[in-house]
Amino acid sequence: MRAVVLHRHGGPEVLRLSRVPDPEPGPGEVRVAVEAIGLNYAEVLSRKGLYGWTPKMPYVLGMEAAGRVDRVGEGVEGIRVGDAVLVGRQAGAYAEYVVQRADAVLPVPEGFSMEEAAAFGVNYMTAWVALMKMARLLPTDRVVVTAAAGGVGTAAVQIAHHHGSEVVALAGSDPKLELARSLGAHHTVSYGVPDFEERLWDTVGERGVDVVLETVGGRVFRACDAVLAPFGRIVVAGYASLDYRWWKPHTWWRAWRDAPRMSLESMFKRSVGLLSTHLGYLLGRTAHLQPVWRELVSFVERHGIRPVVGHMLPFEEVAEAHRLMESRASKGKIVLRVRPSADQPEAR
Ligand SMILES: NC(=O)c1ccc[n+]([C@@H]2O[C@H](COP(=O)([O-])OP(=O)(O)OC[C@H]3O[C@@H](n4cnc5c(N)ncnc54)[C@H](OP(=O)(O)O)[C@@H]3O)[C@@H](O)[C@H]2O)c1
Image (cartoon, rainbow, N blue to C red):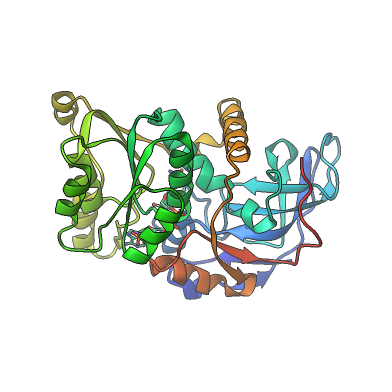
């Protein structure tokens, strides 16, 4: 099969399709013929060598994909060849076939295309866990979503909007904010302008904000922290603006300066809190995650939410897909098409 094996860190040019043996499912496992791969910013960081939650090189990059089960290992019950499923994993998803424990594949939500399924798992779980489980978002809350036009951002805007909360969407440019508005954001502010902080204050006023889902870091984190109202919660799920090179010590200082942080003194003086989540480290906590997944899928189906697939590229253009994500020009999810879908996924 063809797969993207990461042999060395570097720019998008290190991503190439190579031939590796087809994997075979062992007992309790299934093999999925991948149709669509969802790109995640974490894979850009992994490629650059800036992401901790990765296996040792060489390894096949990729955290999520959707496709159909094409082989079933010994002792597997409840999953059949042909079932439409999605997989979430530490690595291995940039491939034509993925072998996964049968109890770790998830059915494609009702009516989703394979591209939508590949755009769903990581982004929506991250947004759901951050907003609903960590921040305990209330319909009466006003919530800020940063990088609001990206994968996690669009998911968070949709979830918060359908929950009834007032959404303030932040992004790096105005065209991105139009997308956030179309998904239900009530207010939008660009952080791509010099007077971003004043504009944010003008938008939220004395009332401030109750919840922030923050994934950018640096100036954006500091501005969101400043407008947090009493009892406010910031959930940090990423810090995409932090960029450093091991061989350039001055970039370490910048990364340290821009890393999100809040002192205990600041928290108790303002009655606010800083929270954080990382889906990767939660993956092993199946008993905790399964009910959360069910809550999320039921919410999404009830509200007719569909993932925003902003860009679809053929598998061969994986390097181009990474360039697009790094350029900050992408909107919604970037999906790689691996093989054509015979038909629409079956409902569960
Ligand atoms: N904790 C978790 O479990 C978890 C899971 C998934 C993702 N994440 C995090 O959530 C964030 C979004 O991930 P995603 O996969 O959905 O990606 P994405 O939002 O589709 O793309 C990343 C976005 O980050 C923003 N950004 C800000 N500064 C940037 C910079 N210097 N370089 C590149 N992008 C920059 C850009 O939006 P603007 O131009 O609008 O700023 C860009 O479009 C990332 O920080 C990621 O690490 C966390």
